[in-house]
Image 1: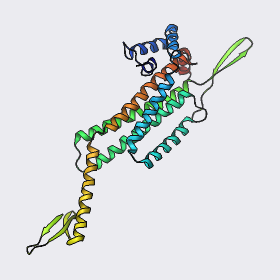
Image 2 (image 1 turned 60 degrees about the vertical axis):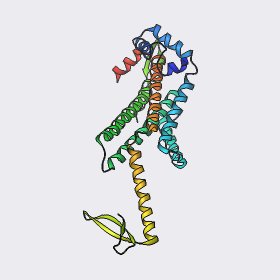
Image 3 (image 1 turned 120 degrees about the horizontal axis):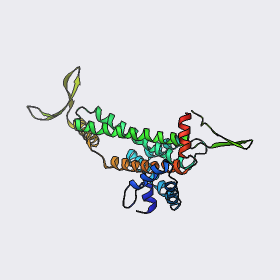
Image 4 (image 1 turned 180 degrees about the horizontal axis):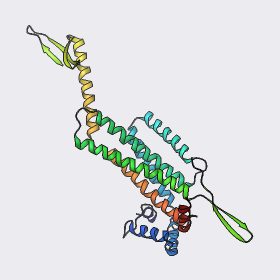
Length: 183
Length: 101
């Protein structure tokens, strides 16, 4: 696995997930060395965004293919719907991270719609085994949790990465947080 | 539903349907009309069976799509954490904002 891919998946060769998690935790607590180490890791991997782009493309392609099968008309309709949804969510001038998070919300929304649709179809059948019904219910639950987490991540990034305003008055600096508009 | 044989020979086709909670058998006919009706019923049964099988199967496509979306969620999670730590927002500012809100 290349370093970019490992970084994207949050893993390293020896300690999958743990090394990066530990660095994030220490950086959040104000450890400057951990912050610097993270910054260097991301600076060393400019290909990270390409990896992430590939993952986003694969997620969308897999979900659309699952829903549309070989029906090109259905596939076109789904892609148009996704495009409209993403434009609405992204708003004007989204950052690269926001665009990626919008892709995540859209993919999760599609997966949830499919899971709920399939569950409804299964429950219409006259004889449904408890096992099968449980399987589809759990799939719906997972899809819903994934979707809500995706929306939360987008909202969190938008709320926390709002630009600061700094005003100098009589040699004193007053820093005010620009409150993001709520919709 | 199905083919019935008359006592003096010859076959005819019938269909069963529900009417007011009871199963009622209706006469369709003989010859070509009966054969077409029988073929149509067989095709509809096959389609319903295939649909039931598809619903009961735990599709590989579903698993693949779910795995791909999980990968996307994991990757974006890493980037969000990185942006919050390495971006303009320091932990102190984060705490200040949380207190202010």
